[in-house]
Image (cartoon, rainbow, N blue to C red; front, side, top):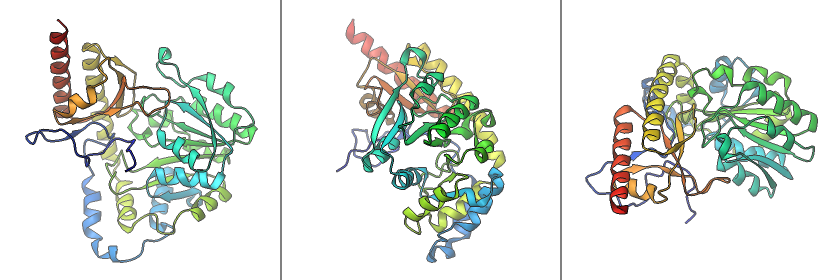
Length: 360
């Protein structure tokens, strides 16, 4: 069986005591859960599920168009953002792909499927894994495709809009197609400070990816979309995927979710408060924590068995040893509700206290 490389695997058999419930810190999903209106959309439209989905997602595309203030013809919907990532590499067939490292592992896998050579821009731990102007020096004319995750995954560190646009300008000059993944941008306190959606009309070489997966806690429904002002690219990406990649239920839920402005505002406040709590507590425990502004936190621990040890407490975290540029000393956790966060911190305190006692 293929080894799973993502968080959210609550299905595999683990050494978790029967009296422990599973608390999944490995998947960066909104702790508020799905909005009530999304749940109602599932129930209210249940009779429509016997029909084939609209292959053009017309109702959903119209709603995204209003929400993002972009023309509807610039939008492509898919079975999660990951679906669109694979369709982009299949459509562009890049000979050479540039990736920051570390970053979301799906970019590498999508490039490898089309036999693209991958060049990495390694981010420095001593600089906090930030993406800065140094990356501009790596944007050579031989690069066909580049992926940029903003905020980056697994670090949670956002890239200033000005730098993203500088990268887009250099890519435009070099005829490089740029994918800017903004799937976590809505968790940022001031998302407009980082998103480039409003500037996309000036860049036919850029596509921005968004997803309902995390911000609306719709991971099991699978829904994402891309925005690109290059009509040929949109048509090519659409033609490569299967005609019914977005289910009826996903389309109905997406329409409902995009009207949940108060839910998103509440989410941002809860994430900020709980992220600050987790970062402070992790640092008090002596762990190396990186300055995330998203709904997940990257930290470093000398205990390479930490993932397995926490599983015995019913806690799942993400070991980052499969990220290029990281190793098994790095772990990523989601920002969850306060009760769960406190349970994680208390469990870490016990683990570290036991380790210290054994070393004495």
